[in-house]
Image (tube, rainbow over all chains, first blue to last red):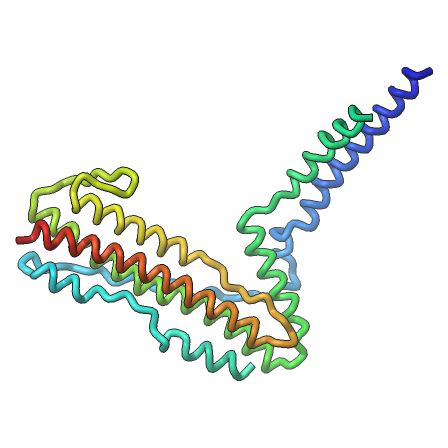
Length: 90
Length: 171
């Protein structure tokens, strides 16, 4: 009698486990954020083409230290000015 | 009882693992949330401005990264010329420290280039708060400014390493 009850309990647990397993897969596929992006209700955003850096050539007689001085990475306020004024107007 | 609990745990675990999300999923999710919130903005003019601001965030990141690419391109050409003048054909770098200053400069250049490539794919989609749309963008603007500032410092580090190499080898 005890064995039968044990087998029934194990069967129920296994069934519940399998159910949860497939349910988990089902949910993860159905509500996956990846699937949402293809849904028709999304607004299409046209990507801006990425500018290609211009090739840089060096004169073989040039002073390398002088060339180095021209390398000046900057994040300018001008870069953000249009965006910031737009955001203020929202 | 313990056995039952263990069995339940082992059987539930795979379903949890199967729901794991990737960085791309986070991106898609943030875009979906953005579009969903965007559709709730009734004022068409305001909605257009929000879309435009979102696009500008992306554009600024790409534009500044493109400038940084040009800076790295220059540094790379300078280093290559320095190597050519000194008859060096290859660089050996391990754990950020090369045998020579030329190697170290090459390492930091590569490090900065990878950082720029990583920055280009960063997502600054704002999490729109309908009660404070400008605030949602301000958070992302500050985040973008901060990230680009860090990136600039990485390029400056590469530049200083190239300069050390030039000072040492170009006499």
